[in-house]
Image 1 (cartoon, rainbow, N blue to C red):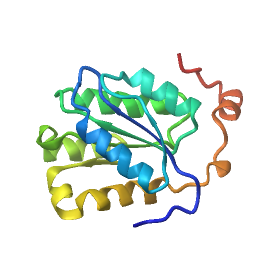
Image 2: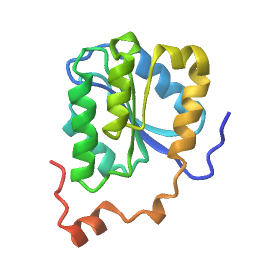
Image 3: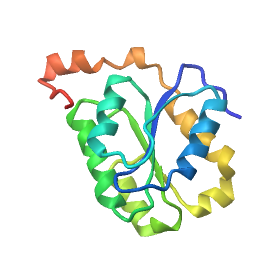
Image 4: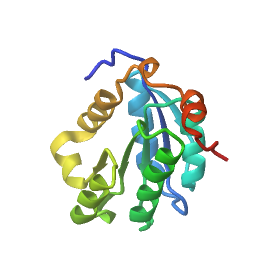
Length: 161
């Protein structure tokens, strides 16, 4: 089990029009058991809701489950909206079982998603390995990253509404 050197905070949710929240609830509980502070939004959450909370709560990462088929648009927009709000440092993770195929996973990684976990990742890494990867990658000292309000003043950042 990876032990974070810094306090790690993450937002978890199931994507818009997705009522399948069992997987993200399990991920949330395992993240919490590893000391991660989790802000769980539940199911059927829009990109705007996730970004607003991620920025307000000053998190290092977001983890989204998406089983409804709109994952390409959802994850792409999530990365874009985080960047628009000067929060491009927030890492985006996701999964959707076999709904998200290998070619789409590769494309989402090219578009800036930190990691989409596949069923093969689950078999190879196990749940603990996937959680360890997220915690390790989110173990960032946020005091070394300018706050959203500082960036907004310096670069005319857009408030999240």
